[in-house]
Length: 206
Image 1 (spheres, rainbow, N blue to C red):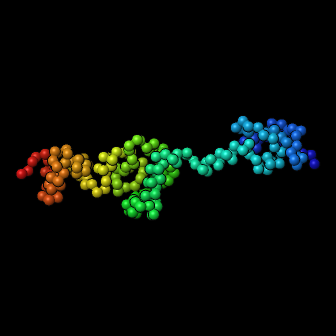
Image 2 (cartoon, rainbow, N blue to C red):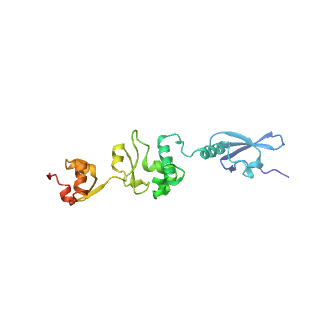
Image 3 (tube, rainbow, N blue to C red):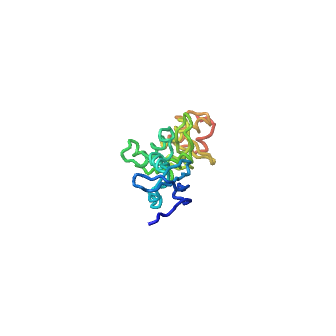
């Protein structure tokens, strides 16, 4: 039976350049094949035509690397932040789960992949950590920022947020704005029951 000449054919990444007079240990004629990566190898026709061989070996190496890591950033601080967020929201065994996933704090679906989190939030800046604008809502792009500890302390869910004339601030910031102590403003609001307009006035009451 005459062997089919496959010179000029392409199989996966391999282009068959020409047929040689060399044979393998099974007596099969070998073809010179050029891979898309530039390497050249000698192969018989059978594994090519059966699609058992698709490259010089580079395709297997690429798939192996991609299986090990798809982003090559698993040792970065940004990756660790993402992993911690994911664990707090999804892993009931995590020590902070009760304060996050346990109370309904969810992770944006696309952020289940680190690449999407990195695309939306960027690399973790030095000295900053992930923070949510509204601590009663989940981790998603519009509710998250990289922030200092000072900013985060103002966003804690046990902080008292006060809205007056379209402006929302925590109690400590309002106290600073009207030049009064935090206990003093607290007393105005929750002991003396002043209306907001009076409580947030810079006027002093004896």
